[in-house]
Length: 176
Image 1 (tube, one colour):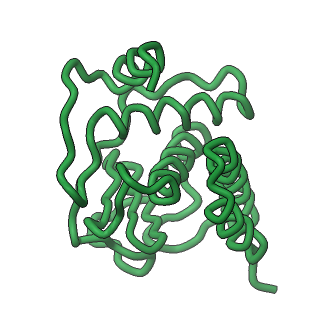
Image 2 (cartoon, rainbow, N blue to C red; image 1 turned 45 degrees about the horizontal axis):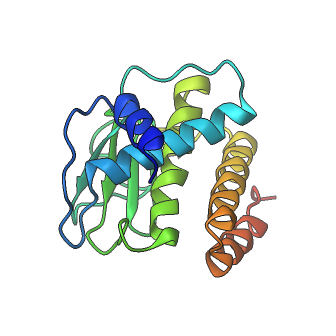
């Protein structure tokens, strides 16, 4: 990572120190870099979007919640395999099974969730009480997040990961 990206990422996340990650963990540096990249990608689509006051806190935990579980009374609970984004709480819960440090595909999942965090900050919730409020908007958000995730993977020359994201995106639709 270049010194400029490291500096920008650390400033964006508000961290003064770097941390090293154990297996199944994510370092502050990696989280900050992905946040900076997600912010850059999001603002390329939404000029004028201001950086949120704070980035979501990342917790590595086996307590990843799903759509149907809303023990926190939050308006945004999203799960894909091993990630939960809790927007109002400003948290991303990651399963220890994800290797954010060693896998570009796994790192792109956190990047994808950061995009959803920015969408939520800018436009408000698409879920409340675990219920979908606006399917069309939700699908549009997913398409945008998947598109930016796919571009990130392609820039990293992770062609198989980009193909998997493209396949996931192809199946997005509201029930008829």
